[in-house]
Image 1 (cartoon, rainbow, N blue to C red):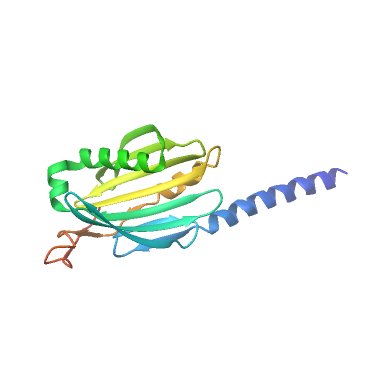
Image 2: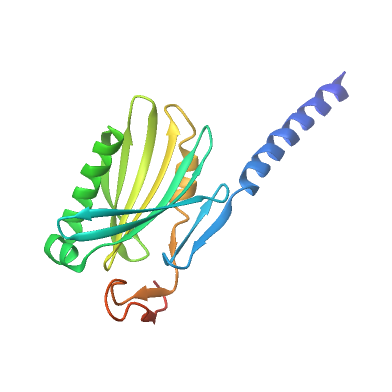
Length: 193
């Protein structure tokens, strides 16, 4: 009877660890050369491209999303018009992005904190809706705005959101000209971003 109990415990531990390993093994690096970033995702994302007309010009949004019943992760980047960055500045852009985001999801802000990602100042928004809990990373690098979002059902596994957000990395390229300008393919390679 002792051997059966010990065998059962060992089998249960093996199955638990095996399930955790399999869930972790599904995560893979998503690399966006055009977006100049990489991030770990639980699977291959779908891509969507939107163009928004704003007071300061058209803004193309490049959106990569992976969804399941218990987790949605989204990696997005947009190249903002230089005048928006110059006139608004980082803080104003983060506040407008937060407000627009919360209005869009009809969410309530829990926290909106400054963070630093690879030497760039950003903001992390934590929010909730009646059915969802989410975190959003806003990061402005020169004129490119990155928006990384993770969402789980209320009461869901919040650590999976952090698993996604904490893997965001910039590639070793920094764009020195806006893509809508004459020299749009000029890149400067840098080290230690």
